[in-house]
Amino acid sequence: MKDENYKKEMQELENEAPTLFGIPKKNNFTAPEGYFDRLPSEISEKISAEPPVGFMEQIKEWLIKPQMALASLALLIGISAILYLNDANKLSQMAAVSDTELEELTLLAEAYSEEDLMIESLLAFNDEEISLGEDIFTDEDIENYLADTEHYLNDYLKEL
Image 1 (cartoon, rainbow, N blue to C red):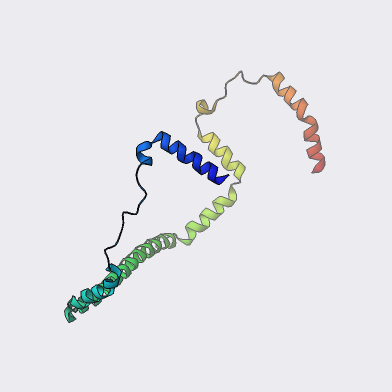
Image 2 (spheres, rainbow, N blue to C red):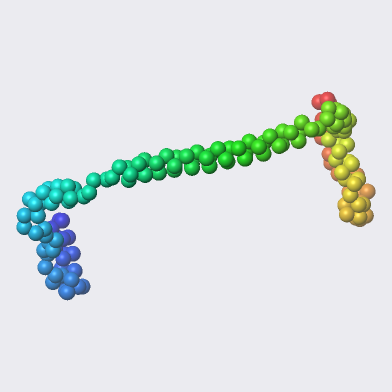
């Protein structure tokens, strides 16, 4: 079955692209004769031909690596200091609030319930801005709504 499919595909390839099919199958990549026999000796020669690294070059290389580490460390310390100082400023501002101001704020917060705050905020708006209009709900609409929800109110009052 596989051979039939392969033959069929090869026949289609020959019909579709005769030039491509005519290219011979050969390995164009070859190594010169004796290349791998000579390779270890050539590598050894190149290594021995390199001049030895001087004492000063070794010292320069040794000094550059710690400089990179020190630069990274200095950057980290700088960023940490900036973040710490910003937090310290916030804490000092909070500490600058006197005890009497804190007590007054606490008493004020206790004096107002959420409902009182909502009422005050609604009253702070101009009446024209929050006006719903005169003719939105008639008295009859309100009476019908109350009649429909009366049993819900009675159930709620019984639960209390």
